[in-house]
Image (cartoon, rainbow, N blue to C red):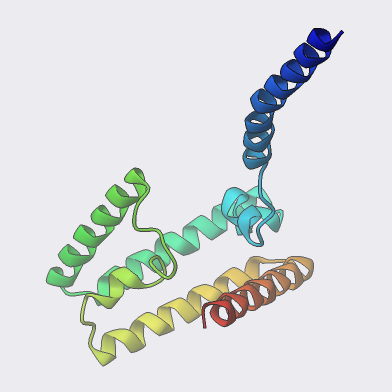
Length: 163
C-alpha cells in the first residue's frame, strides 16, 4: 500500500513539474492588452473605418506632402535623408532601433535645417493636417480626436513613470 501511495505521489509530482512550465509558457504567449498596441497592429487609420475613396485620397495627400517636403531640402540634405531612411529600414528589418522616441522626426533632426526650411516644413505639415481633416466625416473627426487624447494621456503616463 505504501509503495502505491509513494508511486502516486511521485507521479503527481512529475506531472506537476512537467505541466507547470507549459502553463507558464501558454500564459506568456497570450496577447498583452497594452494601451496603444491595437493601433500599432491594425493601424490608427484603419480604426477610423475609412472608405476606399478616403484611403485613396489619404495616400494622395501623403504623397503630395512628401514631394513638397523634399522640394524644401537641398541635394545634400536629400542624400542624408535617403541614407538615414535606408539605415532605419535596415534596423527595422533586424528588429533594432525602434525604441522610445526613435521614430518621430529623428531623420530630419540630423539634417541641420535652416529656420526658413523648418518654417516651410511646418506649413506643409499643417496643410496636410487640414487636407486630411477635410476628407473625414464628423464622426471620424470625433474618433480621431479621442484617439489623439488617449495617445497624449499614455505619453504623459510614460513620462510620469520614467521620472
